[in-house]
Image 1 (cartoon, rainbow, N blue to C red):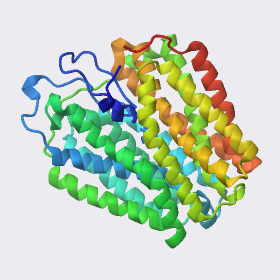
Image 2 (cartoon, rainbow, N blue to C red; image 1 turned 180 degrees about the horizontal axis):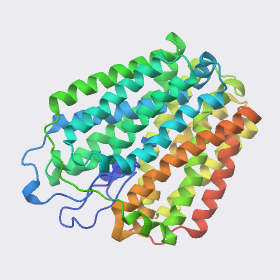
Image 3 (cartoon, rainbow, N blue to C red; image 1 turned 45 degrees about the horizontal axis):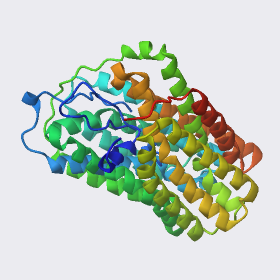
Length: 441
């Protein structure tokens, strides 16, 4: 069982856990949340999750460079999931339906799913400092275009740029962290970087909703652009030259996909995570049209969701340390009950607020649970398995936004939790019946 100090790694679906210094061959790959992202959810496979040999190990930790990466994580996760807190205002201003506006989340996730495995290959001859700065420039440009968007196509172009930055950053961040600090400090460095995910999870949605109410939805993207400019400045000052070292390849993926346990894990991810994001992406229309909450109340509820997700990451990691199957089943069962509760009693402000807060809390079981499942399914190819898992997460995010949007457009604001209920039940039952039964040591 892991110690509590490792739980921040379990919060993120796109970052590998710290590897034991004494056993560099025992690599494993980790996943976040909330966001959506993730983290966040949200977000792609590390370029290399093997601890570097002692001869390549940095003698001194470069904490300023690590801090610049934490700022990058915060900016990316904030930008990825801002549409969830601004959806109705964006849709009204752009003259489209809520479901159509929700595709701003879909396109980002789809592009990130493609960018994650491909960008390390396409940029393998380039200095990693230049590559990371290029990703931050794309983040700046994406936020600027989002703030200036006068139509849905223009907004989607901006979100494509964000997807490239998102997928590229997550695919390389862990490998770069290993080059910025000695191996003995890798865990601390990754924990520092992942504070960006936690802070964005708690703050992005409520602050975005609050700013959107005061100054319009574009103001939230302007603020996100300001954060990305600060990140760019810090990275220019702090990141050292990082000549290319690794030679990544994706040849193992086909072999992994032929393994039944791997396919089962990916199917469960697609069902459970798409259900979650169908509910989360369209939660604001429900609060406005069914619960009839004010913008101030919506902001408070979204803050509750973020705080719930923050603590859920720790509890979910604790449960998954004993049994990843039980963690996923418990989280899925709770969210299914909460989705049904919103369908039945979503008109009640108190019930809705509690349900959404608990929803964020329950999601914390998924990232580490699925990560552990995949590593057990392919212990000899943990890096490749992690890449598949990240791609599955992004596809699930996109699927949830697409099908949730269709449900909302045709059935109304309750369409999101309705899709979430169905997908979550299927994914939870699949995990209960076919998930790993071994208890983690």
